[in-house]
Length: 166
Image 1: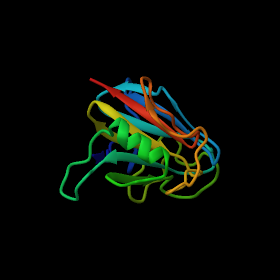
Image 2 (image 1 turned 90 degrees about the vertical axis):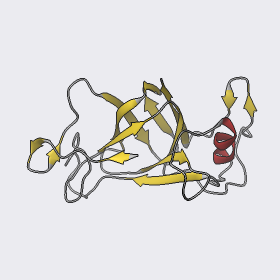
Image 3 (image 1 turned 120 degrees about the vertical axis):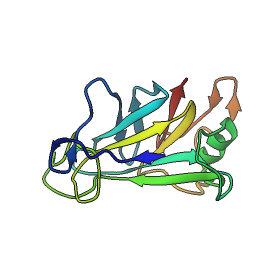
């Protein structure tokens, strides 16, 4: 569930609280990278670091039916998503809340009327996907072909998996 926080450094500009769990997101046309890629359940802040002048990514959760509450993805969901199949998922597009000079709003939570590059989520244990701008729905070819094995699914470089631990 996406939560907005509106307390912080100035009128309407919320910042990441000291000691908060932050995942740095790099999402370019060619790759998605998360640092760290594993984090504890609870309040999590996703901070879009690259590209510095804007960019966007998509946050993906499992939602099999319209009435279901979104939650973590299964290995099968991740395999389908790696192939470009979004069936049974809920996708939230995330990009800076406004366009301005490079660095405007960096470190602030995205909220209506506020520049920012940080999103606050409250997540339970499991796997969630981050898709970069180069990811394509219904991709016809992924190299290597996604499969689920002992280590989990093989994913394309335009997708990353955020592991949320209990």
